[in-house]
Image (cartoon, rainbow, N blue to C red; front, side, top):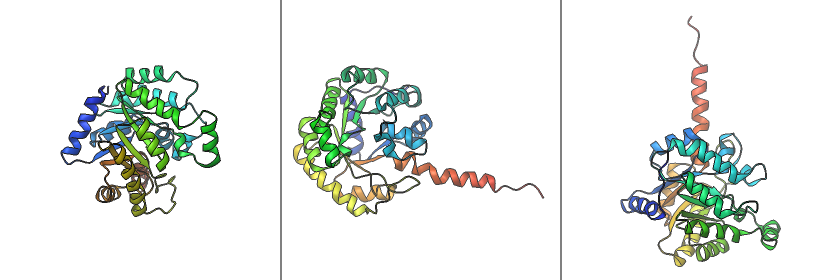
Length: 280
């Protein structure tokens, strides 16, 4: 069963890695076998997300942003039954839908901590929406501020907090009102593989957009840990580019680990078995 970490101990582990010259690797884990072997590979943080479940069923990540299932119940059950029992030492965090009007969020966060989660991340998030839909959510009381409140409640419970933002306005709001321990600029759906959104964004553009947001948040809080995520970041070479061209302390991977890492190897291994012939 996964170890439970205080926020202080969690941060100490992460900062020790950075100080030792080891970039951080945070990944999603959509099932137990993913969690088991991602930990063996040396990941620093494991995240349980409703999108991870959908990815492992062969669907695109955005399925987790649609009203198909109870996102918070899903990550609670996945964590309790599948992920946490397979993990030995790596800290595990929960992707929490902070805009959940059907739960007492403080009680839910207490339950997450009780079963073994050591941190939370505001995901799924209304920050992914824009335009009239996002504006309507905000004006009808279902906006980003609820996620800010959730992160602050988690911090009061001594849980590490991770914040997503997709634009500069949300980044400022997040850093000034929640002050998460880790900031992640979400550059967009990861490209590549069978369900990637191949929008043609280059790694250079991904780095530039990320760098602009990092500059903003570091002016607000210099010691915040920065992770890169999404868009053109799909393999280790992309991660190296981000480290060389931004101030990020590491990367967060969802599709890049859970999905892309197994799609072609699984097909290749199946073909290898199928290519075996009967004896002549």
